[in-house]
Amino acid sequence: MAFEIPQDLHPDLMPLAWLLGRWEGRGHGDYPTIEKFEFGQQIDFSHNGKPYLHYVSQTFVVGEDGTKERPLAVETGFWRPQPDNKVEVILAHPTGIAEIWYGDIDGAKIELQTDVVARTITAKEVTAGHRLYGLVNGELLWAYDMAAEGQALQPHLWATLVRA
Ligand code: HEM
Image 1 (cartoon, rainbow, N blue to C red):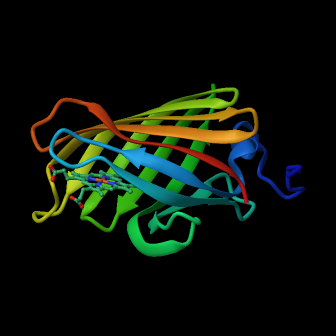
Image 2: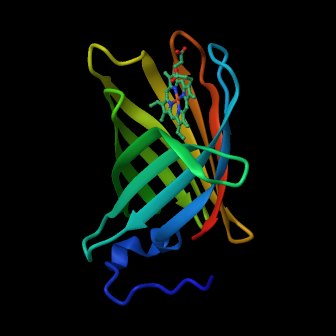
């Protein structure tokens, strides 16, 4: 589907404009402490004329035909582009985790690293994250590496989405 840059987009958001809209797709997950799994994902990036994107990711257990059967992880936050193609991201998870990320925008590729991972006392012991987002042939590819539960930084999730 053709994507048009909204007329009221804040100029600071231009380097991230390609993320705007709804994306839908499938992903895989793994970690040394758990069984491999698959998931469906819907990502929404929206703006309100201010210099940040509002981000919401919802994931699901999906049936063979793509039907959403039940919710898995959800996360939400704000993407704040900065001068020199830098970006700050604030994310919150219903699992009791909140993160501050710093990253670089390189055209249609964004690389993020956690600066701070804060946890409630009942949250799992997540200590660091690394994310890659890229637009490849019109598809949004993203991957999440995590350090958690005493394990070194390594892949937890990877997914491919298309514009809905
Ligand atoms: C696309 C989003 C995600 C999906 C579909 C997903 C799915 C899963 C699944 C199915 C498990 C195994 C069962 C369970 O413990 O609930 C799991 C474990 C886990 N996930 Fe995720 N996850 C997602 C995102 C995240 C994020 C963003 C974080 C960290 C902020 C995270 C941290 C963990 C941790 C710490 C575990 C437990 C590992 C252990 O118990 O040893 N996950 N995830």
